[in-house]
Amino acid sequence: MVRHGGCLGLGLAAMGTARQDVYEQLKCNLYEDDAVTGEAAGLAMGLVMIGSAAPQAIEDMVTYARDTQHEKILRGLCLGISLTMYGRLEEADTLIENLSRDKDPILRRSGMYTIAMAYCGTGHNRAIRRLLHFAVSDVDDDVRRAAVTSLGFLLFKSPDQCPSVVSLLSESYNPHVRYGSAMALAIACAGTGSKEALNILEPMINDSVNYVRQGAFIASAMVLTQQNDIMCPKAATFRNLYSAAISDKHEDIMAKFGAILAQGIIDAGGRNVTINLQTGTGHTHMASVVGILVFLHFWYWFPLSHFLSLAFRPTCLVGLNSDLQMPVMEFRSNAKPSQFAYVPPLELPKEKEKEKVATAVLSITAKAKKREKKEAEEKMDVDEPSTTEKKEEKKEEKKEASVKETTKKTAEKKESDKKESKGDEKSKDGSGKETGKKEEVPEEEKKEPEPNFEMLPNPARLLRPQSKVVHMPSNSRYGPIKSVHQGGIIIMRDTNGSEPVTLVQNVAAGGPKMEEEEQEPEPPEPFEFKDEE
Image (tube, rainbow, N blue to C red; front, side, top):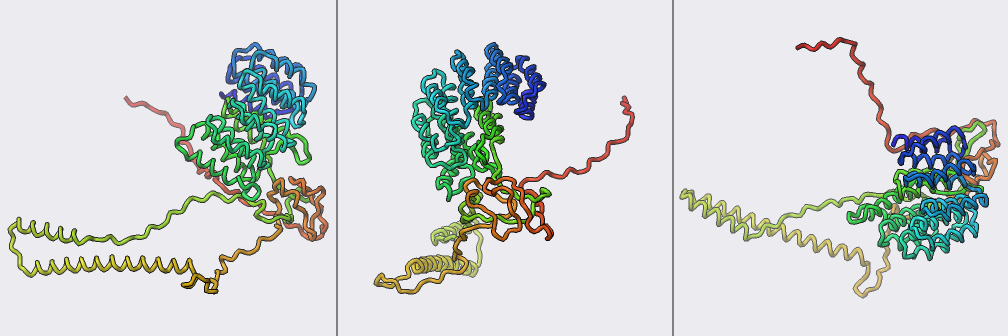
């Protein structure tokens, strides 16, 4: 298990370098024929050689995949082979043809992922047609699921097309195809808040199959990343569905796992990151593609879900001066502050203070107690003076009178409260017409009109839709070298270099903090231990 993690870590550290020494080290671990280590080694070999289309690496992996008897190793190599052909387009056609015709379903599944990686983000019609053919004709459910899922990788640059392509597949009789269509929507429409995608995913949350519900939870969270109630009115509905599924004791464990992941994805990075498979300039972002592809394989090995962190991209706007320091400055966003605001945090329901009600004492109970006391005295045959009996009788009578008085007062109070509340609700006279007097609204309750713009401090959170309406103020001291619409880190030109520069002060990070380690006592001086017999 340690070597499994070591292989994955090495593959990620050397991702895309095509270093031969690292590749050979991983190949040695693969040839040890250990199932757990071999799975990670096969995946890591693909990470190191990603996009290289190295013939020797492909031959090594395909040959060993056909020889091994371990399904885990075969699954790792299935991913490794597809990653090697990342972005190679028509160069991968020969390999795709060979893998798609193989009798082993895992290698056919590798063929589907190879199509996804080779034509990633291109929307290639022939590749889409081939994936749709396998999605409806292959005899293996895993191959069909992989084929439908791979459609998302091809269509993420045109997210509006994906819902129409997978809408019929989402209603398939095969639950694996339904799951794959949910994942395809998650990949293609991630972070867009697409209404069409959510309309397809919403019925799946009530699907009869547990893993389809799991996929619908995860997919909807990926679509709704960084969406508030104004940008997407359905965001609050889906958030409530996640919490309901997590707290429901009768919900299936697989669906509950999906809801837990969804709750984390939708609020990932403190709502300061999004899932985006392309850069600001429209190029495919390799790390995000790899992260989502490997994340999808939590189906077989759930720790692979951590790979999703590769797909998260910070949505920020950071202005730096020539010394690469953050000066105090502002950006103007020509949108209402609520349009792109954070989703308000969850609030625990407050417990109402219970009013103490005076307990009513019935006159029957008082008489019964009096009778019991009298009987007890008669049994004891103790003669007491008559004055004490009279005093006690008077006390009991006073007690009864006070109880009746308190119950009467509480009843009168309730009636008066009801009358007051009715009077507050209706400010009308006996004929039903308004009296014309308007109640004065306190100043605190009067809401001020929301401004049409917002000044963002440096550094700022900048969502993708917000980048279209942000620009530098006209009176700003700094001017950007490139357009601020692209977001990210932007170097600023100081138009008034004579004045002193005020830098942004570092702020301590919130959240849980590590406890300070206390000084440990010094070890004792060396001594000889003598065992006294």
